[in-house]
Length: 429
Image 1 (cartoon, rainbow, N blue to C red):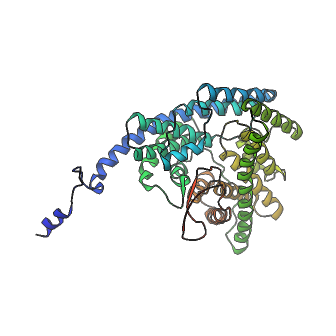
Image 2 (cartoon, helix red, strand yellow; image 1 turned 90 degrees about the vertical axis):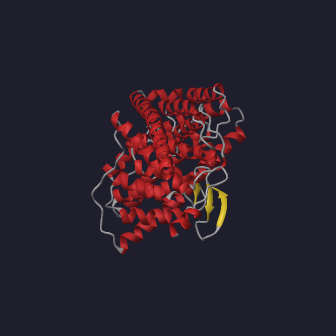
């Protein structure tokens, strides 16, 4: 009798479908197939993008005078976006918006961001690659969903799959890549329905990248002091500084874009002028340490344990001038550079472990600009190992709280307050 009562409690909906929990095996198989497909396709594209970026960077280092063509590179990027009818492209903001508001991400975003980012790096603009990967993967994932006729809700998930796959293929951090798209869209909540799809897509794309010879990024170091009251205090002090630096970087990027558009109306002239500004800044500095993404210079911070005191400020300036003018690329690797430079400087001044401070700076500033503490913690484990866990955990928590509602992406929604258990539903600034 009890069994019959339980059976009668299981009711079908108006369309005759069983409750979703009883469809879990079918849902799992569906997303297993879709995630593998997305991981392979986007992983191949991400791998090609990574090799193209490496070639562009190597060519620029071998031929430093190519930076003189940066204004023409800017003009080419504006022409490319207009030729592909993508001149109103909102970049990563469009990808994030597509997840929480249903906007369509056109497939043409993928070749646009691919070619434009390579051009930016080839000619010496200061930009990253992972932010571009989010656009590349999000565009491809969204297009796969539309091509297969998925529902709007499923398109949101496969868009996140594409973002995870591209991030994982390029940077080699599959744990952080799986979580980041779910976390960065809406701060205060996570789209757990995308956990399995994003994990599978991330691991698949990572496997594709490794198969074709891409080595994951890693910055291992050994001199990690014991976690004591004193070292915890110094880490907290560094995290406070990182929160301020992250707000400065976000503000610089947003203000730069507005100033360019206010004083230079024509997009072609704006991009060319930005290229000229970068050439002048590079000449004043005397070398190209602040051009491009700067991963090799981050490695130098760990090896030397020293840094030019104004390096983090100069990287902020170079990146804001580049991206504000209309050049394309990501903000995440420049964020790592800025955080690493600031952390290394803190270590030099305080006498605290320079390598540990460099790692903590990278983690804390990344958290501050993306408002993604879980992803920041995971990426610290994948880049630096687990031995420094208490330091990364403390720095991420403090930076997340004190960085306020600033963020790289204006489409990012802060659903719940950072300071109290209240629903605010506002955009990052």
